[in-house]
Length: 249
Image 1 (cartoon, rainbow, N blue to C red):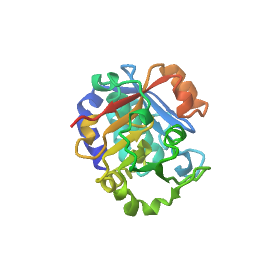
Image 2: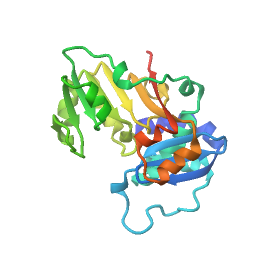
Image 3: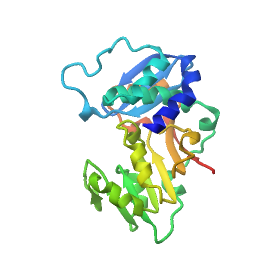
Image 4: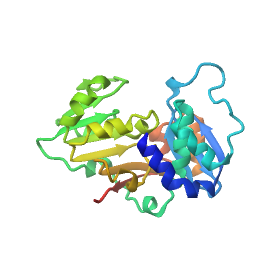
């Protein structure tokens, strides 16, 4: 959880100044809005929730100091971890560097060469469509209809062989991101992708991550409606901009 540790450390002063005024845990995504109007998102691992009629013990009493919610990012509980990351993303993705990010499609910005071996950790249909015909290996728990799948257990063996990788930012929530990036230490281009992505290049300077592709919420009320009604990333694009930051070293 080194990335989350450094994220907390860098954002701690700002988090201490802010309060969480709205928290929504939906079937697809979790959203947290702070008292300055900023809003952050994180994926909801709904299949990894605790049993019982209440999946968050302190539901109804979460509003308050943002720092308290942010500390939940390190929790082994998937819902608490999502709340924590969404809180930190509210701060991270409202910083000037994030706001200056470009509206671009990550698939159009990948540095690709004909001989590249490409990994997708998490299946992104729009990206997969643009990579059609290339040597792509998909690691995905939810098999769906995609081809070229490998079990998650083969990541340590296969990821070091990859030249390019597109990695889901939900790996920050289930605390697999550090291991994934370690195994991708030979890759030339690595994109961290999804609404859960913190647009903070400083966090990834010592990794092989070269692209951060995330979302900046522009219409918080609409985003909360979409979250409450079970919407996913595609629906959230009506309330948020998909943006891209390249990490320059």
